Length: 400
Image 1 (cartoon, rainbow, N blue to C red):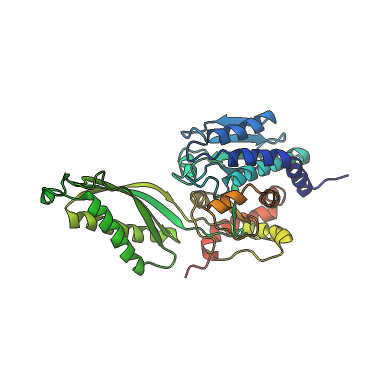
Image 2 (cartoon, rainbow, N blue to C red):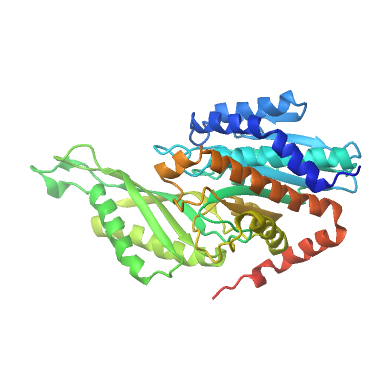
Protein backbone atom coordinates (compact mmCIF):
# COMPACT_ATOMS: atom_id res chain seq x y z
CA UNK A 1 0.00 0.00 0.00
CA UNK A 2 1.35 3.42 -0.95
CA UNK A 3 1.71 5.92 1.88
CA UNK A 4 1.52 9.63 1.08
CA UNK A 5 4.17 12.14 2.07
CA UNK A 6 1.59 13.93 4.19
CA UNK A 7 0.80 10.71 6.04
CA UNK A 8 4.49 10.07 6.73
CA UNK A 9 4.78 13.57 8.16
CA UNK A 10 1.72 13.13 10.39
CA UNK A 11 2.82 9.68 11.58
CA UNK A 12 6.40 10.75 12.30
CA UNK A 13 5.36 13.74 14.39
CA UNK A 14 2.64 11.74 16.10
CA UNK A 15 5.07 8.99 17.14
CA UNK A 16 7.52 11.58 18.48
CA UNK A 17 4.86 13.46 20.47
CA UNK A 18 5.73 12.06 23.90
CA UNK A 19 9.46 12.68 23.39
CA UNK A 20 8.78 16.20 22.12
CA UNK A 21 6.51 16.90 25.10
CA UNK A 22 9.27 15.86 27.50
CA UNK A 23 11.79 17.99 25.62
CA UNK A 24 9.44 21.00 25.68
CA UNK A 25 8.87 20.74 29.42
CA UNK A 26 12.58 20.31 30.12
CA UNK A 27 13.30 23.53 28.23
CA UNK A 28 10.32 25.36 29.72
CA UNK A 29 11.03 24.42 33.34
CA UNK A 30 14.70 25.43 33.14
CA UNK A 31 14.50 28.79 31.33
CA UNK A 32 17.80 30.17 30.06
CA UNK A 33 18.29 33.69 28.76
CA UNK A 34 20.20 34.74 25.64
CA UNK A 35 23.51 32.93 25.02
CA UNK A 36 23.02 30.88 28.21
CA UNK A 37 20.81 28.22 26.60
CA UNK A 38 23.30 25.44 27.34
CA UNK A 39 20.77 22.94 28.72
CA UNK A 40 18.24 23.53 25.95
CA UNK A 41 20.88 23.26 23.24
CA UNK A 42 22.37 20.09 24.75
CA UNK A 43 18.96 18.46 25.23
CA UNK A 44 18.00 18.90 21.59
CA UNK A 45 21.43 17.88 20.27
CA UNK A 46 21.52 14.78 22.46
CA UNK A 47 17.99 13.81 21.35
CA UNK A 48 18.91 14.05 17.66
CA UNK A 49 22.32 12.45 18.07
CA UNK A 50 20.67 9.41 19.70
CA UNK A 51 18.63 9.08 16.53
CA UNK A 52 21.70 9.07 14.35
CA UNK A 53 21.60 12.60 12.97
CA UNK A 54 24.76 14.55 12.23
CA UNK A 55 25.22 17.38 14.75
CA UNK A 56 27.50 20.40 14.76
CA UNK A 57 27.44 21.78 18.29
CA UNK A 58 28.60 25.32 19.07
CA UNK A 59 28.10 26.27 15.43
CA UNK A 60 29.85 29.51 14.51
CA UNK A 61 30.74 31.98 17.24
CA UNK A 62 27.64 31.43 19.39
CA UNK A 63 28.30 28.74 22.03
CA UNK A 64 24.68 27.54 22.18
CA UNK A 65 24.00 27.54 18.42
CA UNK A 66 23.90 24.18 16.62
CA UNK A 67 23.13 22.66 13.24
CA UNK A 68 21.73 19.18 12.66
CA UNK A 69 21.88 17.82 9.11
CA UNK A 70 20.12 15.06 7.19
CA UNK A 71 20.98 14.31 3.57
CA UNK A 72 18.70 12.01 1.60
CA UNK A 73 20.04 8.57 0.55
CA UNK A 74 19.31 9.84 -2.97
CA UNK A 75 21.84 12.61 -2.35
CA UNK A 76 21.51 16.38 -2.25
CA UNK A 77 21.90 16.87 -6.01
CA UNK A 78 18.68 17.87 -7.81
CA UNK A 79 16.95 18.31 -4.47
CA UNK A 80 16.18 21.27 -2.24
CA UNK A 81 18.06 22.46 0.83
CA UNK A 82 15.45 23.24 3.49
CA UNK A 83 16.19 24.62 6.94
CA UNK A 84 14.05 24.90 10.07
CA UNK A 85 14.84 27.23 12.97
CA UNK A 86 14.51 26.32 16.66
CA UNK A 87 14.64 29.23 19.08
CA UNK A 88 15.92 28.52 22.57
CA UNK A 89 16.11 31.56 24.85
CA UNK A 90 13.79 32.69 27.61
CA UNK A 91 12.93 36.19 28.82
CA UNK A 92 14.57 37.64 31.95
CA UNK A 93 12.16 37.44 34.88
CA UNK A 94 9.37 35.89 32.79
CA UNK A 95 10.78 32.62 31.56
CA UNK A 96 9.27 31.23 28.36
CA UNK A 97 6.76 34.04 27.99
CA UNK A 98 7.24 33.89 24.24
CA UNK A 99 6.90 30.11 24.03
CA UNK A 100 10.39 29.33 22.74
CA UNK A 101 10.09 25.87 24.27
CA UNK A 102 7.32 25.29 21.72
CA UNK A 103 9.30 26.89 18.91
CA UNK A 104 12.21 24.59 19.73
CA UNK A 105 10.18 21.38 19.50
CA UNK A 106 8.33 22.57 16.40
CA UNK A 107 11.70 22.83 14.65
CA UNK A 108 12.66 19.35 15.83
CA UNK A 109 9.28 17.94 14.74
CA UNK A 110 9.50 19.41 11.24
CA UNK A 111 13.10 18.27 10.86
CA UNK A 112 12.21 14.69 11.84
CA UNK A 113 9.16 14.67 9.59
CA UNK A 114 10.89 15.93 6.46
CA UNK A 115 13.85 13.61 6.95
CA UNK A 116 11.45 10.66 7.26
CA UNK A 117 9.57 11.71 4.12
CA UNK A 118 12.80 12.08 2.13
CA UNK A 119 13.98 8.64 3.20
CA UNK A 120 10.68 6.80 2.72
CA UNK A 121 9.88 8.37 -0.65
CA UNK A 122 13.37 8.53 -2.10
CA UNK A 123 13.33 12.32 -2.41
CA UNK A 124 16.72 13.96 -2.99
CA UNK A 125 17.72 16.94 -0.89
CA UNK A 126 19.05 18.16 2.44
CA UNK A 127 17.18 19.24 5.54
CA UNK A 128 18.78 21.07 8.46
CA UNK A 129 17.67 22.10 11.92
CA UNK A 130 19.24 25.33 13.16
CA UNK A 131 19.43 26.00 16.87
CA UNK A 132 19.23 29.80 16.92
CA UNK A 133 20.03 31.41 20.29
CA UNK A 134 19.40 34.89 21.62
CA UNK A 135 16.36 35.93 19.58
CA UNK A 136 15.16 38.07 22.48
CA UNK A 137 18.41 39.97 22.96
CA UNK A 138 21.10 40.26 20.30
CA UNK A 139 19.63 38.56 17.25
CA UNK A 140 21.41 35.22 17.06
CA UNK A 141 20.10 34.54 13.56
CA UNK A 142 21.68 37.76 12.30
CA UNK A 143 25.07 36.66 13.61
CA UNK A 144 24.63 33.18 12.14
CA UNK A 145 23.62 34.77 8.83
CA UNK A 146 26.75 36.93 8.77
CA UNK A 147 28.87 33.88 9.53
CA UNK A 148 27.45 32.01 6.55
CA UNK A 149 25.67 29.23 8.45
CA UNK A 150 22.56 29.52 6.27
CA UNK A 151 24.48 29.72 3.02
CA UNK A 152 22.95 27.63 0.24
CA UNK A 153 19.46 27.34 1.78
CA UNK A 154 16.60 27.25 -0.71
CA UNK A 155 13.95 27.65 1.96
CA UNK A 156 13.92 28.59 5.67
CA UNK A 157 10.92 28.05 7.93
CA UNK A 158 9.89 28.32 11.57
CA UNK A 159 6.79 28.54 13.77
CA UNK A 160 5.81 30.88 16.58
CA UNK A 161 2.94 30.84 19.12
CA UNK A 162 0.70 33.90 19.36
CA UNK A 163 -2.95 34.86 19.82
CA UNK A 164 -4.08 33.80 16.37
CA UNK A 165 -2.58 32.15 13.32
CA UNK A 166 -1.25 33.45 10.02
CA UNK A 167 1.16 32.54 7.26
CA UNK A 168 1.60 36.12 6.12
CA UNK A 169 3.00 37.98 9.11
CA UNK A 170 4.62 41.32 8.51
CA UNK A 171 6.64 42.18 11.62
CA UNK A 172 8.15 45.48 12.69
CA UNK A 173 11.76 46.50 12.16
CA UNK A 174 13.51 46.87 15.50
CA UNK A 175 16.74 48.68 16.35
CA UNK A 176 18.26 48.45 19.84
CA UNK A 177 20.77 51.05 21.00
CA UNK A 178 22.73 51.87 24.12
CA UNK A 179 23.10 55.57 24.87
CA UNK A 180 25.76 56.75 27.32
CA UNK A 181 26.09 60.27 28.74
CA UNK A 182 29.34 61.51 30.22
CA UNK A 183 29.34 64.45 32.63
CA UNK A 184 31.27 65.54 35.70
CA UNK A 185 30.72 64.50 39.31
CA UNK A 186 30.31 67.07 42.06
CA UNK A 187 28.77 67.40 45.51
CA UNK A 188 25.06 67.97 44.97
CA UNK A 189 24.73 70.33 47.95
CA UNK A 190 28.13 71.99 48.36
CA UNK A 191 29.02 72.67 44.69
CA UNK A 192 26.34 71.55 42.23
CA UNK A 193 27.47 74.29 39.82
CA UNK A 194 30.76 72.43 39.37
CA UNK A 195 29.00 69.29 38.13
CA UNK A 196 27.67 68.22 34.75
CA UNK A 197 24.65 66.02 35.38
CA UNK A 198 24.63 62.90 33.20
CA UNK A 199 21.53 61.70 35.03
CA UNK A 200 19.65 64.78 33.95
CA UNK A 201 20.69 64.12 30.37
CA UNK A 202 19.13 60.66 30.52
CA UNK A 203 15.95 62.07 32.07
CA UNK A 204 15.64 64.79 29.42
CA UNK A 205 16.22 62.22 26.68
CA UNK A 206 13.35 60.03 27.83
CA UNK A 207 11.04 63.01 28.39
CA UNK A 208 11.86 64.39 24.93
CA UNK A 209 11.26 61.00 23.39
CA UNK A 210 7.83 60.98 24.98
CA UNK A 211 7.09 64.31 23.31
CA UNK A 212 8.39 62.98 19.97
CA UNK A 213 5.88 60.12 20.03
CA UNK A 214 3.03 62.52 19.25
CA UNK A 215 4.50 63.03 15.77
CA UNK A 216 5.33 59.39 15.00
CA UNK A 217 3.50 57.26 12.46
CA UNK A 218 1.02 54.71 13.87
CA UNK A 219 3.32 51.77 13.06
CA UNK A 220 6.38 53.37 14.71
CA UNK A 221 7.36 52.67 18.31
CA UNK A 222 10.00 53.99 20.74
CA UNK A 223 10.61 52.64 24.24
CA UNK A 224 13.50 52.37 26.68
CA UNK A 225 14.80 52.41 30.24
CA UNK A 226 17.54 54.12 32.22
CA UNK A 227 19.85 51.34 33.40
CA UNK A 228 22.32 53.62 35.19
CA UNK A 229 21.38 57.06 36.47
CA UNK A 230 23.74 57.63 39.38
CA UNK A 231 24.86 55.99 42.61
CA UNK A 232 24.14 58.48 45.40
CA UNK A 233 21.53 61.21 45.79
CA UNK A 234 24.13 63.73 47.05
CA UNK A 235 26.50 63.24 44.11
CA UNK A 236 25.93 64.78 40.68
CA UNK A 237 26.19 61.69 38.45
CA UNK A 238 29.03 61.74 35.96
CA UNK A 239 27.67 58.83 33.97
CA UNK A 240 24.27 57.55 32.84
CA UNK A 241 23.15 54.84 30.49
CA UNK A 242 19.94 54.20 28.54
CA UNK A 243 18.87 51.04 26.74
CA UNK A 244 16.50 52.07 23.98
CA UNK A 245 14.55 50.43 21.17
CA UNK A 246 12.80 52.02 18.21
CA UNK A 247 10.67 50.29 15.60
CA UNK A 248 9.11 50.97 12.23
CA UNK A 249 6.78 48.91 10.10
CA UNK A 250 9.04 49.01 7.06
CA UNK A 251 12.76 48.80 6.47
CA UNK A 252 12.90 51.98 4.39
CA UNK A 253 11.53 54.00 7.35
CA UNK A 254 14.25 53.00 9.80
CA UNK A 255 16.69 55.65 8.56
CA UNK A 256 14.09 58.40 8.99
CA UNK A 257 13.27 57.44 12.58
CA UNK A 258 16.94 56.80 13.38
CA UNK A 259 17.80 60.43 12.57
CA UNK A 260 15.00 61.80 14.73
CA UNK A 261 15.84 59.52 17.67
CA UNK A 262 19.54 60.35 17.48
CA UNK A 263 18.71 64.08 17.41
CA UNK A 264 16.78 63.69 20.67
CA UNK A 265 19.72 61.96 22.35
CA UNK A 266 22.10 64.63 21.07
CA UNK A 267 19.83 67.46 22.26
CA UNK A 268 19.80 66.06 25.80
CA UNK A 269 23.59 66.12 25.79
CA UNK A 270 23.61 69.70 24.48
CA UNK A 271 21.07 70.85 27.08
CA UNK A 272 23.12 69.53 29.99
CA UNK A 273 26.66 70.06 28.72
CA UNK A 274 27.37 66.32 28.58
CA UNK A 275 29.02 64.36 25.83
CA UNK A 276 27.32 61.21 24.63
CA UNK A 277 27.89 57.98 22.74
CA UNK A 278 25.33 55.86 20.89
CA UNK A 279 26.07 52.18 20.24
CA UNK A 280 23.77 50.19 17.98
CA UNK A 281 23.40 46.71 19.46
CA UNK A 282 21.30 45.02 16.75
CA UNK A 283 18.79 45.73 14.01
CA UNK A 284 15.91 43.36 13.23
CA UNK A 285 14.35 43.88 9.80
CA UNK A 286 10.67 43.41 9.01
CA UNK A 287 9.58 39.87 8.24
CA UNK A 288 8.11 39.18 4.79
CA UNK A 289 6.55 35.73 4.47
CA UNK A 290 6.37 34.18 1.02
CA UNK A 291 2.67 34.56 0.10
CA UNK A 292 2.36 31.24 -1.78
CA UNK A 293 3.80 29.31 1.17
CA UNK A 294 1.75 31.38 3.60
CA UNK A 295 -1.57 30.78 1.89
CA UNK A 296 -1.05 27.02 1.81
CA UNK A 297 -0.06 27.02 5.50
CA UNK A 298 -3.21 28.99 6.33
CA UNK A 299 -5.41 26.60 4.34
CA UNK A 300 -4.00 23.65 6.26
CA UNK A 301 -4.34 25.43 9.61
CA UNK A 302 -7.95 26.40 8.89
CA UNK A 303 -8.84 22.72 8.77
CA UNK A 304 -8.20 22.71 12.53
CA UNK A 305 -9.17 26.20 13.68
CA UNK A 306 -12.26 26.76 11.47
CA UNK A 307 -11.72 30.53 11.77
CA UNK A 308 -9.98 32.98 9.41
CA UNK A 309 -6.30 33.82 9.93
CA UNK A 310 -5.18 37.05 11.54
CA UNK A 311 -4.62 39.80 8.98
CA UNK A 312 -2.57 43.00 8.97
CA UNK A 313 0.00 43.80 11.62
CA UNK A 314 -2.27 42.99 14.54
CA UNK A 315 0.14 40.51 16.12
CA UNK A 316 2.89 43.14 16.44
CA UNK A 317 6.44 42.43 17.54
CA UNK A 318 9.80 41.95 15.86
CA UNK A 319 12.06 39.02 15.06
CA UNK A 320 15.58 38.40 13.80
CA UNK A 321 13.98 35.94 11.36
CA UNK A 322 13.01 39.07 9.42
CA UNK A 323 16.65 39.45 8.38
CA UNK A 324 16.57 35.92 6.98
CA UNK A 325 13.37 36.70 5.07
CA UNK A 326 15.28 39.37 3.14
CA UNK A 327 17.87 36.83 1.97
CA UNK A 328 15.91 33.60 1.55
CA UNK A 329 12.51 32.26 0.55
CA UNK A 330 10.89 31.88 3.96
CA UNK A 331 7.84 31.28 6.11
CA UNK A 332 7.45 32.40 9.73
CA UNK A 333 4.17 30.66 10.51
CA UNK A 334 2.12 31.80 13.50
CA UNK A 335 -0.15 29.45 15.43
CA UNK A 336 -2.66 30.17 18.19
CA UNK A 337 -1.27 29.15 21.59
CA UNK A 338 -4.46 27.94 23.27
CA UNK A 339 -7.38 30.15 22.23
CA UNK A 340 -7.14 32.34 25.33
CA UNK A 341 -5.89 35.49 23.60
CA UNK A 342 -3.21 35.97 26.26
CA UNK A 343 -0.46 38.26 24.92
CA UNK A 344 3.15 37.18 24.52
CA UNK A 345 5.85 38.28 26.97
CA UNK A 346 3.68 37.77 30.04
CA UNK A 347 3.84 35.37 32.96
CA UNK A 348 0.43 33.96 31.99
CA UNK A 349 1.64 33.20 28.46
CA UNK A 350 4.66 31.43 29.98
CA UNK A 351 2.40 29.30 32.17
CA UNK A 352 0.15 28.39 29.24
CA UNK A 353 3.16 27.52 27.06
CA UNK A 354 3.58 24.27 29.02
CA UNK A 355 -0.07 23.20 28.73
CA UNK A 356 -1.32 20.11 26.91
CA UNK A 357 -3.40 22.17 24.50
CA UNK A 358 -0.36 24.28 23.56
CA UNK A 359 1.52 21.05 22.85
CA UNK A 360 -1.30 19.73 20.67
CA UNK A 361 -1.49 22.99 18.77
CA UNK A 362 2.24 23.31 18.13
CA UNK A 363 2.37 19.77 16.74
CA UNK A 364 -0.58 20.44 14.44
CA UNK A 365 1.17 23.60 13.21
CA UNK A 366 4.39 21.60 12.73
CA UNK A 367 2.57 19.01 10.65
CA UNK A 368 1.00 21.78 8.54
CA UNK A 369 4.29 23.62 8.01
CA UNK A 370 6.17 20.40 7.22
CA UNK A 371 3.51 19.55 4.61
CA UNK A 372 4.15 22.95 3.00
CA UNK A 373 7.88 22.20 2.90
CA UNK A 374 7.23 18.74 1.45
CA UNK A 375 5.07 20.19 -1.32
CA UNK A 376 8.08 22.26 -2.37
CA UNK A 377 10.02 18.98 -2.68
CA UNK A 378 7.48 17.02 -4.71
CA UNK A 379 5.61 19.64 -6.75
CA UNK A 380 7.84 21.41 -9.28
CA UNK A 381 5.07 23.76 -10.42
CA UNK A 382 4.29 24.78 -6.84
CA UNK A 383 7.98 25.43 -6.13
CA UNK A 384 8.21 27.52 -9.30
CA UNK A 385 5.28 29.64 -8.10
CA UNK A 386 6.95 30.03 -4.70
CA UNK A 387 10.13 31.34 -6.32
CA UNK A 388 8.19 33.79 -8.48
CA UNK A 389 6.28 35.06 -5.44
CA UNK A 390 9.51 35.70 -3.56
CA UNK A 391 10.38 38.35 -6.13
CA UNK A 392 6.92 39.88 -5.95
CA UNK A 393 6.41 39.82 -2.17
CA UNK A 394 6.83 43.55 -1.53
CA UNK A 395 4.26 44.39 -4.17
CA UNK A 396 1.75 41.98 -2.68
CA UNK A 397 1.68 43.63 0.74
CA UNK A 398 -0.41 46.79 1.03
CA UNK A 399 1.89 49.62 2.07
CA UNK A 400 -0.23 52.68 2.62
